[in-house]
Amino acid sequence: MAKSVNKVRVDIPFLRTGIIYLDNAATTPTPKPVLDVMLEYYQKYSANIGRGLHCAAKRATESFEAAREKIARVIHAKPEEIAYTKNTTEAINIVAGGLGFKKGDKIITTVLEHHSNFLPWQRLEKERGVKLELIEASEECLLDLSDFEMAIDKKTRLIATHHVSNAVGGIQPVEEIGKLAHDHKILYLVDAAQSVGHMPVDVRKLRCDFLAAPGHKGLLGPQGTGFLYVGGGRFAGFEPLLVGGGIVEEVELRSTKLIEPPQVFDAGTPNIPGIIGLGRACEYVLEIGIEKIAERERKLTEQMLKIADIGQVEVYGPLDPARRGGVVSFNVKGLGHHDVASMLDEIAK
Image (tube, rainbow, N blue to C red; front, side, top):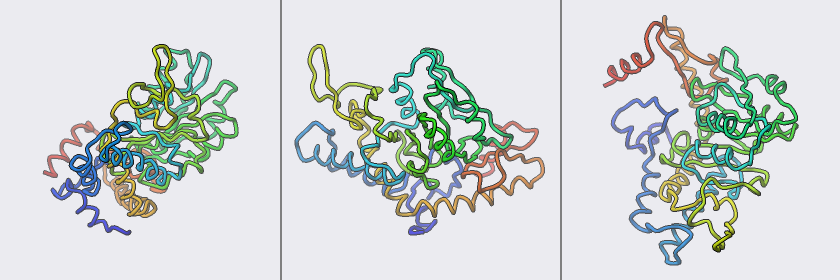
């Protein structure tokens, strides 16, 4: 590793408290280099973007836009394919609201999805008459490609799946699902909230049209940041979720011409320091090396899975560390999960 584990720990102020932090599936503590660039923005060029002509505004705009290229490097995309969002939830809602789904269209998703990749499609079913088909999972909480093959019909417009389960950690066959969708000319969205930054993610290999991810998990970025990848020129005709200041090229009393994507998704004053911080976080992760991060997570996951050998401990999801990410969920038989979590937290104090 370019950075040792101890160096990374030193870089993260929260970890200097001595805490053993195991809640990275929810959010990850932020390294000091990321905090430093955010503080630098506030102290040296705290201006809005895309509006003023003064030097601080120019620097803010340049720093804000530079993050697209850094995010793109992480997932092997182009900067112009990256739209900034507040989180994965917003990214998926942009797709749900921007593609003009209509009655009779079919969307395929799964029973394992995070609410962020389920509720937007459920809403379309209720409000627009879209047909929502749910794919079941195996006992190990893994998806079977053949189930998607059987679910596809002529009215299927979109398949939406997670890459790594936030609940049990299983790695899904996203490349195979992407090829299937591509072969049938169906749009494919990947919820990469638990994979980006944790393991190599290449949108070209996934053949996905959309990929949604947060900044504050595997990328070690600030909370309130995320992005949406939109490939294949599919920004064309895409309706932005929000309209307002900062995205107008020309406005009249009865008509408005908006600027081009991806900047058209930056209505209002965005989270400028957060996005600048996200760009630095992407650099930080790339400096460590995503392959090396994935290798270390595999070793830690293999070690953590040994708790399955303890009597009364039940581990959820696949027991093969090669088939799961770093999320390991377990419980003690006969006890409520809230009770177990509270007891472990109390013991660690």
